Length: 230
Image (cartoon, rainbow, N blue to C red):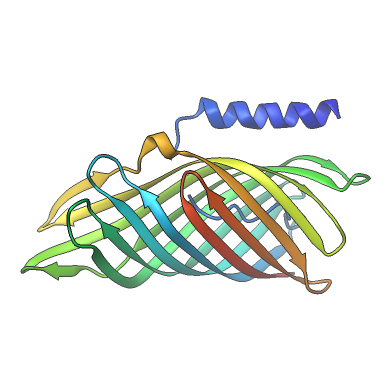
């Protein structure tokens, strides 16, 4: 129990002590050393507030997932796919950028595991970048990139086919906007950077499972993934 509490405190101090920039956390299952996870994921961001008068963002993203177990306690996570951005400035119409390319990367570290109590603590970093198609508004070219970063710490307990988890994350989601070739980074509201994560892995078979996850406070978002173990 002392080691368990120590891991939690280390993770929280790590999150608070680093001023960072939300992406799905992937849950607490890590592939074993030299093993893989392959899967698909849909990630929906319903609302993320931007700083000052920049309004809010929405996005829907679809990815192919690949995770590789470097060690039993370390996983590298990669993804590639498509996504769109909708940005709604204050007192202005929403800008709708059609779906195009997106991708991401990250890692997860097993901080604690008690096989008797089936409790696990996992910390991680994830980044997503979405590059939708450009749009023309009143003859002016508008281009955008969604830049999404987070650090997280999750605690889970295995309950047969269900492995629910809860955690916290520190995240940042920026809207990088080019208007007629002039670039400006519009940051997310940094007073809303700390979020709550709720999720669960649901075993479907010995080799396959679903991951469901929702985010609160820093953003309103949800993700669903189907994964296979290799």
